[in-house]
Image (cartoon, rainbow, N blue to C red; front, side, top):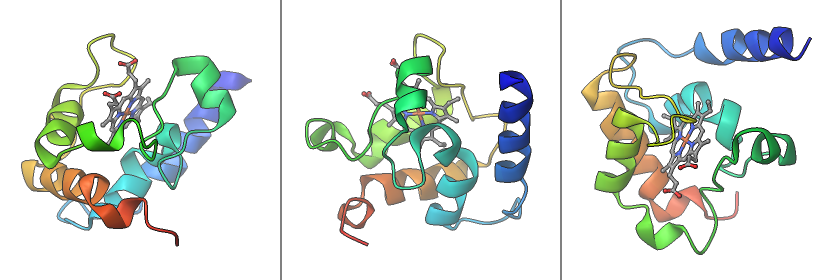
Amino acid sequence: MKRLVTCVVLVACSSPVPSTSTDGPALFAAYCAQCHGPTGQPSAQMIARLNVKDLTSPALRPKLTPAFVEAQIRNGSQNGLMPPFATQIHEAQITAIAAWVASPRFVAPK
Ligand code: HEC
């Protein structure tokens, strides 16, 4: 059942962005939000299951430079819990997502 739910979520999340899009927020919603949450704050369930990191955490923000986030997206996490995206999305899209996550607007009140 859990697996079915995950599949449905993945399918629902990964379709709407055109492969040419470099819209950082839209790409984040499509490729990252399923684990990190729509605002970068993961759900308690995701933290419990994968130890997903809160991208809005004040402790983590100073580390989240565009270059750091790009490398993380490209290669995934060393422990393999976050998959690499280098073969799934274009370089320009990796750059766009990283710029969005690293920007102060990412944590600005919405
Ligand atoms: C399958 C779930 C999953 C998806 C999808 C995912 N992540 Fe992650 N992410 C994780 C997990 C789990 C970690 C923590 C890995 C670890 O323990 O080192 C993580 C860690 C990170 C970190 C590093 C935080 C740190 O403490 O160093 C960044 C940055 C990040 N993710 C950004 C992204 C972005 C941007 C995307 C979308 C392209 C994305 N993630 C997609 C699960 C995911």
